[in-house]
Image 1 (cartoon, rainbow, N blue to C red):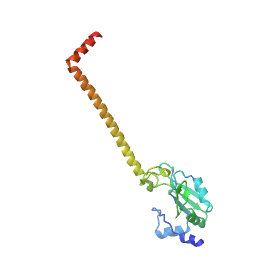
Image 2: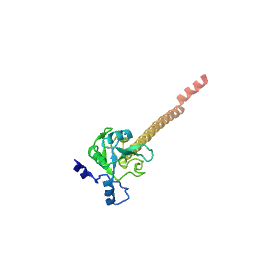
Image 3: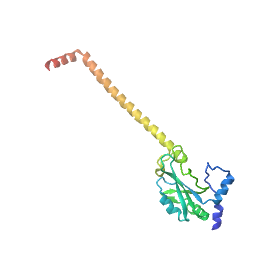
Image 4: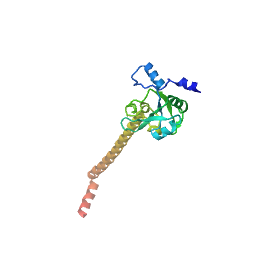
Length: 201
């Protein structure tokens, strides 16, 4: 069974675009790494849930939850660091693709956690991938940022159109009342009746 782990050792589908070294340096770090990147988490998944699931593969040194840079709330990823390399490899083998909070999670070897990497890199403070999502995902904050902005713009347009429609309706109503008043004042018969009413009062 250990040959399965050796095949995965040093391989990682996840690549930190801000890793400062070369690909060779990255590969060397991955071979020694005991840190796992965990993606596609629900925004509501707690650190306790991460510990409960990932401790099945071995003793955990620490868990760092990914946070929205602006709101400091969870944004769907974390780093799990084990004490032993073999436990990290077990995690890749057995936990990758499993369900947590009704979501299929992704695990991958990571070069190691560095302060600052716990924050999302998107313009909204969360993960970049969530900004381009078109579908509604309640576990990851609803619609993606682009879709939310589009819907907000449509909502504003609808409100403006309704407001203008009501303004136009009110304008038409006021215009009709004024026209009726003017007709009343121009028509001698109505003017006489009004004068008689004024005299009787």
